[in-house]
Image (tube, rainbow, N blue to C red; front, side, top):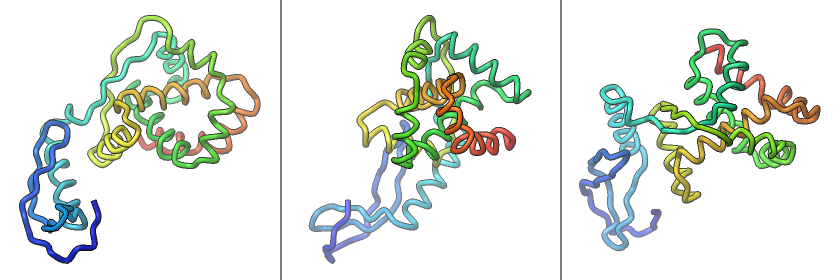
Length: 195
């Protein structure tokens, strides 16, 4: 929360994130209770998360469930990238969607209009397998913020992103393939080759 009041004091503020408590001294408005979360506060928070990540990476995993059909399509796609584990591809698909498509209103609108939703729905059907998809602390903070903003579970956001990306990968639509080649493939390739 932002405020323009001048009546402030330094206090220890507690922030809960992923079942962990973070405490740091920062400036707090005495009039409205706004917490100044700039520079040092955010830096200390991220350092704290990095330490937790080193000790307990499972705290930065999102449990998602995908159908056997999606897994078969994913395995077929992964033949082009030997040695890349399924969970790495799933993480990369989510990141590319959220950081490259979803963030650009024009791209998102174009992409979503071209998706074949009958394919997407078919990728949801049947028995499902659990995947624990791990994210770095900074990305997890972003994902939790998106979930809070949209009032959705982080796993739902990730699953939806991956379903859309896999639908695009297996689609035969010429326009969608052109969009994929021009707007998405390079981003995906860069990250996959770095993995």
